[in-house]
Image (cartoon, rainbow, N blue to C red; front, side, top):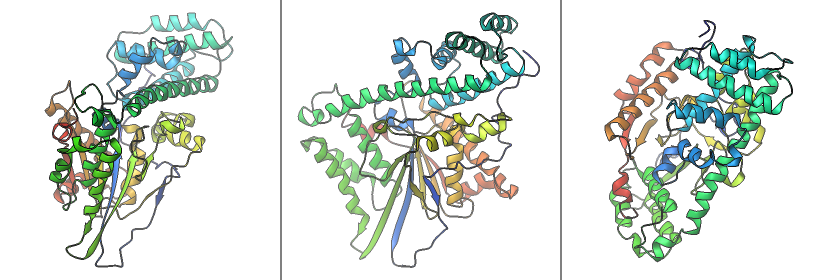
Amino acid sequence: MDSEFQLPDFSSSHIFTPPDLPNMQIYPRKVSIVEYEKSFNQLIILGNGFDLACGLKSTYRDFFDYILYKKEAENNYWYFVFQSLNSRNRLNNNWTDIERQILVELKNIEFLYKKGIFKKGELNVRSKASDFVNSLSESPEDYSLRVTALAAASAIQQHYFEIPSKKELQTHLIKKILLLEEHFCNYLNEQIEIEQSHIDDYFINNEDKGQNNYFIKSLIIEYFILTSKIPSIPLEKIISILEKIKENGSFDSFFNQIQGINQLFLDDEDDEIEIIKNNILSFNYTESFKDLNIRNIHGALSEGNIIFGIDYDRLKVNFEQPPIEFSKSYRILENGRSTSMNISSDINIIKFYGHGLGEADYSYFQAIFDSVDLYHSNTKIVFYWSDYQGVEKQAIRVEQVKNVTKLIEEYGTTFTNKDHGRNLLTKLQLENRLQIEEIPIEELLQYVN
């Protein structure tokens, strides 16, 4: 491999820049002047693991099994790359790995132009790519370059008379990402439409176990997360409702019943009002509950504007002239969709579930942690995880611990006070403000599985 070739920098040595997003409005820390009022303000952050736990087939492998052999997948740079890497088991089964690979591809293309393998205006791109590929070794880094060179040569040969400029090729790749997003949106919509058409089947014929019951499961898990860590809402209350789920005649009836848990937020015994403020920030594209304060940060199926992209900070650290069109911040602003959500400073607890905590979303988490002044405040953070088929429970927990540790430690590197940054993880643990807990999925879903 060429000595000048460098893998993208995924290190934590740089300073993050929070994304310039209209949905994150940071307010000064405030104290309630009504001393007798008991309030509880929580932020829920959901990732693809939530949809998976509810039965949706939303992993990238599920999607690729669906799309790769369809005509729509032909002549698409990204499908060629992902299929090549997947065949060599060089991708994990999550979307954060896909977004990471987009960065790798952009870095590889930068290298090909810098080394003169591709030069604007030249012909015979296929032979130039073949000569370069034949010079590579069998190392993982060289295999990645080999895939990029062949995929890029194929795209250039199909769409250009001569080798385009690097910027022109990047524009072409953006267009292909847009197609991938459209295909993934259609893929999820097909599943959601089927689930929607059968939403009452469980209640009409509760002996039928053939339905996935996505909406029922999502409602149950959602309300478990919303009510956990609130002393007045014990798990037993939810279980008691689930035990009688078959008495409901429709999904709407069950929805109204379980939503009635909200009434427990009123503490009549003490004649005091306990106000629960729920905000849900979802990195998914599905919209299970339109009546709650939920924001789909990367687009929603109903709007057909879902987004794949890279954290802007990763682009800054890896490129002299960052291709910002591939950043999530740019794509959100370009879409022009309203993503307003008030991330206030007085949040009592932040709950994560189903998010892979990938680097592509670190800037969002920094903005949130900054808004609550995580080091000095009393805000607690809970990272939930759950068991799933194919992986041992202990391995799932270990991986979650690693991801949480990496996220907190990397956030600490953004502190001006480096001593505070280094001991943030320890401080959160000593103050019992950081927890990693399992959601009892089997117990919660035993009545609908």
